[in-house]
Image 1 (cartoon, rainbow, N blue to C red):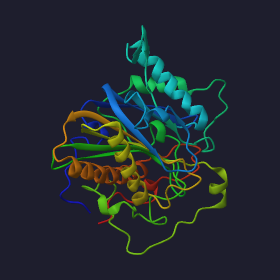
Image 2 (image 1 turned 90 degrees about the vertical axis):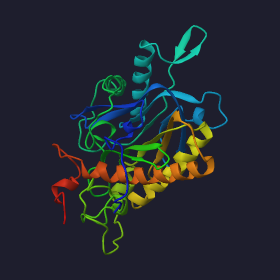
Image 3 (image 1 turned 120 degrees about the vertical axis):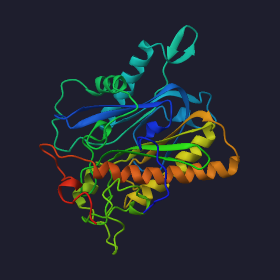
Image 4 (image 1 turned 45 degrees about the horizontal axis):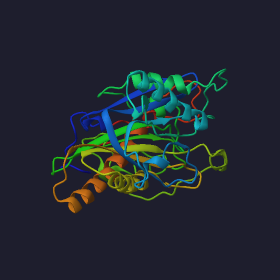
Length: 337
């Protein structure tokens, strides 16, 4: 396990100065929304590797598109219904006087992605789509400090064997750049080796952040029940962020590299039944030094913090009534040795 690693003060994506995160959830529906907000618009990119994504405004994040900066990024439960969370965020930002100026109009740029949590035991018989209100509420809750586990977009998330959740982690590089990750884990696969206490991401753990159990001594394949496959009830969606000054193309490359974190922390990852997606964000506060080396290091760090964030999401999940899956914490002590 990593011992020389230096995390930010909170070990959260908001260790990247100028970023805030807000969560909103409905425990009766067993779902929620998470918003990443910048103090100012920030450069963003995206990369999709899952076979079943659900997204809003991701096309404009391609490196050849005109608008390079966004006002916020949204992760939400609710499948296609959850895409409406970004509308609530956009409306609230416009009311605050934020957005891309077009003549005398402001148009907030709010890309989003969703996960499927519609058959997780919550009451989904709503009379009106709740996600627009959840998006606005999450934006209003945006702060540097925020909760992890069964909150926000991770409220109703599951993996093949445990409840999923919302996770985050950060690292400060020798160059002085900070890299952070935020992720809602709702994977087809598993974050642990079988049902034991050992996380696939164990080699990257810092300071016992997910139990200090260490790597497993034996390999165990993941058994995925046919019901989990048939339900298509999966997808891990995340964000990596840095204060390094990156272009939209460089953000896209950081998002691409960060998918290695999914593969290090979830087994299997990027399946045809997952909509795995990662946004990347750059506040641009710190210039690059040696560009090629810094980009390599930032991409590697993005993968590592993403793996840690995934493990933290599962580790910190908490139980609630009508859960379809047990929590990791209900079965394994916090410290093994």
